[in-house]
Structures are given as structure tokens and as C-alpha cells.
Length: 258
Image (tube, rainbow, N blue to C red; front, side, top):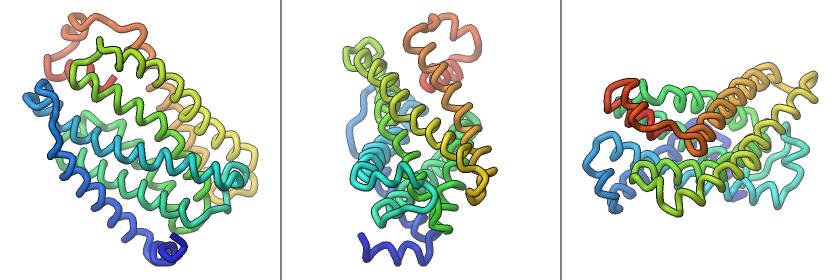
């Protein structure tokens, strides 16, 4: 990895595009896997399943990678501003490539309007990650931010089970509790720690204002999503009531994204 680092640092933008193409290849390969019948017969469910499959690969890879980096180099937690290693830098390249690919998939398949929240999230993440790749600052902070991908594994599994109409399955019931646990431990904790670090060191940090604004926006988003998650899994509304709030197609999309 040390030998690869100078190559990536010479042209971070190109490196991210190459990683994006790698995830696009993964997207193509995953289409060869069998899907549940209820997914295959519906265009929106089919697209969402393919999209989530790539997201699951990204989360399994980067979530494990991020936790391993911090375990081996604990200084990443205490010096998020300037500390980084070759594996950490490569991780941010790979993850940035995924977000570029996913944003492109959402836009080019015509799902931007229904997935605008994800696009805003991707833009916020990408500007932070690209700044780290070009400036070599906050790489450790980006690694800590990728702790959220541990929770994304259970979030993606939850949505895939909903796509397959398996909300009553034992796996879904177990996952919804595991999902809350990982949301608090890995997503909320990582986001709030980074926010705390920026506030505490704001006076001397490069682009501190931009990062604080970005973190504040993301904190608002994840708290709203956490509320929606708890409401949908633990205090669900009846599906008949949902159907009264719009067309059948829109209700299905809302049902699957909550």
C-alpha cells in the first residue's frame, strides 16, 4: 500500500474516478445474482435492490477497513486533522469512488427526485473527502466518519428485507434491534464525536467553519432519519392509511425508504 500511495496522491481526482468505475463493475456483476420474485417483477424494487447491493459491498468493505485502521493506529481518533497512513488515504479514495458511482446511478436512472436526500448526503460527504484527498488533511477524520458504514450494513439489510416483503421474518426482527444499536454506537457516536472535536479545536483548524456547517447539516439529517427509523420499525402506521396519502407507486416508494 505504501507504494500505491504516491500514485494516488499525484492525481486524487483520477484515482476517485477509477474507484468509481470499480464499483460500477461490481454493480454489473451483482446483477447476475438471483433476486426475490417480488423484487424482479417491479421496476422500482429491482433498481433499488441493485443499488443497495452495491451499497452493501461498500459498507462491508469500508466499515471493516475504517474500524481496523483506528484499531491499529489509535492516533486517528485524537489527531483527526493531520495524521494519516497509506491504508487510510486509500480507503478514502475508494469510498469517494463509491459515492460518485452511487450519485451517478441515482441521477442517470431517473431517481433523483425521489432520492434527493441521498444526493445531498453524497455531496456533503464528497466535498469533505475530496478536500482531504487533495490537502492531505482530515484523512483520519474521514476514516472515523466511515464508522457509520458499520451501521449502514444493517440499514441496507433492513431495506433489502423490506424490498423482499420479509418484515415479518425473524431476521428482520433481529436486525431492527441490531440496527438501532449500531446506529447509536457507530453512526451517532462517530458524528457527534467529530462535531465535538471541531468545536473544541475550531480556532486553529483549516476550513473549520465549512466542516462545522457540514457536520451540523449531517447531524440534523441523521437525527431526522433516526426518528423516522424508530417510528417505522417500532411505531408503524397501517399500510392502508399510507395508501390514502398518495398514489400506490408513491406509497410503495415511501414505504420502502422509511
